[in-house]
Amino acid sequence: MPKRPFCPHCERPMTTCLCEALVSVDCPYRLVILQDPREARHALSSVPILVKQVRTASLWVGDVFDPAEVIGASWQTDAALVFPSTQATGAHAAKDGGITTLIFLDGTWKKATRLMHLNPWLQELPCLALQPDQPSTYRIRKSPRADGLSTIEAAVLVLNGLQSTQDFSVILPAFEKMIDYQITAMGRDTYRKNHLKAGRGGLSPQ
Ligand SMILES: [Zn+2]
Image (cartoon, rainbow, N blue to C red; front, side, top):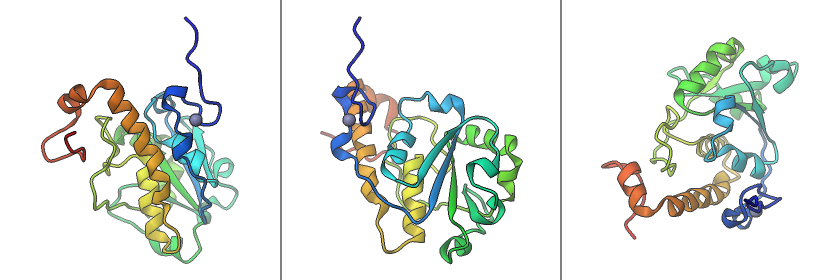
């Protein structure tokens, strides 16, 4: 069987090409996304779309990471971890310029917790917690992050919270388009049956 043609720019099948929706934005923070190798194989990860659109974002796939390699020699003072935590200590430092790098753990709560255990240095970092006031548009996957957001949504929320001069939600339409393609592919009836729970999910009937 011939291979499906892929778009060389967004690296997706031509039939679900996202190029038209992709934008390219600068960001005052470096975004470092750490991803569990099993998460990397997930076709619906939001991370490739995040990395393609934010020029300062980089993806690292693995189990154990060297902070000096992924952040730099002064990682202990430069970076904050975006993670649901009751002790959100990083917001002030991130706003006044002390923090230059934001670390995101991609994947489900279970995988993110696993990365925390495998990389104890993460627990030394100040933490930026998320308090989403809107339900996620991440309507497909059944086990989202503990904060209920996809990684791209978490990035937009935290960046918009830190920065008033730039609206990072311009990177979301490409993500929403990817989800729409997926819903169309599985059929709306199947989607409704399996993924819409009472009181949750933002899809209005056709
Ligand atoms: Zn494309």
